[in-house]
Amino acid sequence: MASHRILCVDPDPGDREETVERLRTELSDLDPTLEAAGTIADATASLDGDLSVLVTEYDLPDGTGSDLVAAAREAAPDVGCVLYTDADPDEVNSDDLRGNVTEYVGKDSVFGTERLARLVRTTATERVQASYPVPQDESERLAALRSYDLDDPQLLASLDRITDLAAAHFDVDRASVNVIDEHSQEFLACHGAANDWDATDREDSICTFTIVEDDDVMTVADVTEDPRFESRSERLVEKGIRSYMGANLVTSAGLVIGPLCIYDDEPRSFSPADEAYLRDLAAVASDVVELHSRLDASASAEEGQS
Image (cartoon, rainbow, N blue to C red; front, side, top):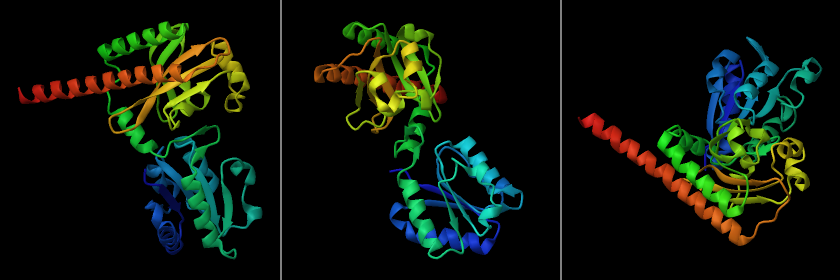
């Protein structure tokens, strides 16, 4: 499991150290990575997609907690934010924080540190962006994704042939191999009308749900009837996606980089045999990606020796 990164920002060195040590003790079973900063400027370097929880004081030397929360949300949309402060609640601009902060915890409140630890634990272990789930191994998954040269023309040609096979077998006009990056869904290889699709925000994709499936296959008989896609169904139908099946590409280390997908413009159910076939094709696609990676590494090693 990925280590939970927690950033504590407080201009008071004593309070900052106390908060970090309390969380380190209370969350020892999670083996968290705890970082600290006293200003927004110092905290900026730690604001990225790997950050699980931000705990911040409201009054900071170079701004406010709401300024820092906004910057954190920009860098890591799914980060959990906790305002841990001795500022008077009436002085806090709640309009700026609404929808961004998990909860307000007063430093001087009864059982404040205990409540903070419980809240940070819940936020870290159930880290979920408002509109899509995030895998627990997200950091390792993204590192694996970025280790591949996914722009290699030979690789893309091989993946194109796999989407052709998927489309022919299921008699559909659209199929694709997609990868789920930190904030986006990219189309690596496409069949048919899917060639006209542009990269999408991760929150607008179906595949970001597929990558957290335990059995590595997800089916959607009708996107207009699935509550997960209620806010997206109109856009999906406009693209010709009424039903969907995706099977994950899983690396040799067991990490999911994205799925092989087929799409139908009509409601459609999928059988266990359908799922098994697409899972096998996705395994072939994974093998192709791994093979090209090894060949690239071997070629680079030979060039280095020459």
